[in-house]
Image 1 (cartoon, one colour):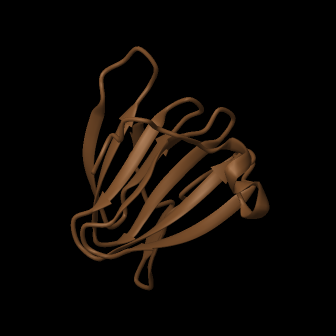
Image 2 (tube, rainbow, N blue to C red):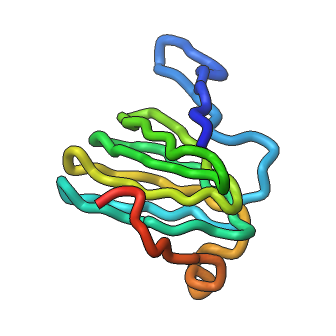
Length: 125
């Protein structure tokens, strides 16, 4: 898991423009809502990259690459964190939250389960 520092590409009296991703092939964009305490994921993808962008709320993320320790972070509005193929990940809402997920790989629509592998031991409960 890597937190990406976002910087506005342009700012003026009207507001700002911030590029969330540049030069990436995206296969799906998904909006996910969470009730407080809801846990999602607890899985990994063998081929899929996933960028998680928080629209509102606060979300705890836990991620683990094979052979490495679990890493945890709390994401808030405007945070962007990427998980890579074979990186186990889980998300838990610390408040009602909304998340946008940008994916590269077989993850969207009917392909969702094709590259989703559930963990036998959850990272978050």
